[in-house]
Image 1 (cartoon, one colour):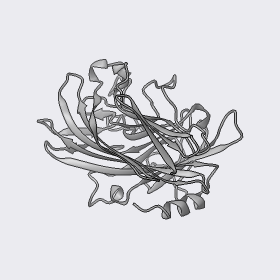
Image 2 (cartoon, one colour; image 1 turned 30 degrees about the vertical axis):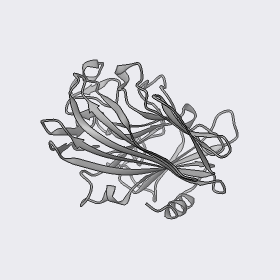
Image 3 (cartoon, one colour; image 1 turned 180 degrees about the horizontal axis):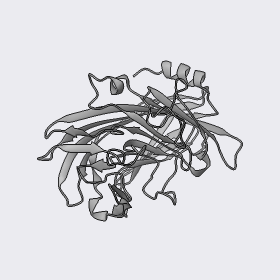
Length: 315
């Protein structure tokens, strides 16, 4: 058996390797602080060697919690957490705008020899208590490869508007702040990942054609992106690879184009932004879906190694 699963009822699900390393903890118990947008998240996230590759409540953004599904601007509500960006006023502390994602139950908890899948039902609730959306989420741990020093995590979302009005998905950029298109599935790295290396399938210019302090991949599109960094305290590097399922980038199937929100400095973070530059609407009763993959690996992988490994993982 390559993985083991422990469920602490009402709190979290932990997945461990056969060597006893806790690869992840899926936390669904609501956090105490509503301002941080209560919702399930994954933390810690670790490599097979046990090196931690996620951050939790850093002092610059207390609402950043490992790996989590977010929506920074949704019809005037903030399901990301923290301060809200207001056009002409900048970031404001507006607790009355902070929504939450309520855990309603697990429809699937399935463990095989080398694979674990959870399927979760959630409800997105605006600050006043109205239920706006139903989500079906699936998280799968698979492809544990001790020889490669890696394992994979798939995260899928299917969201249905149960509100009486259209839901408008946006970001700080759609509200007027340049190159701040964060929203969607977001990863926050640990402090020692600050200044790490970021690369995609090929060298790309930044979204406006110039190299900026946000990095050349900020606001671009692509099938995958990798983030590699050296740890403090230990003599080791780790690499995370963020990959889209093919349909995410297909205009015929995706509800809206996706772009990368990615920073190495001043903070290490990556988000699969589904509304970077433009808002999109979800009509009452309508649904959309996305699938994502994250490969967690020991070592400093290069572009060729990432590309070869991803080709060996089927969707």
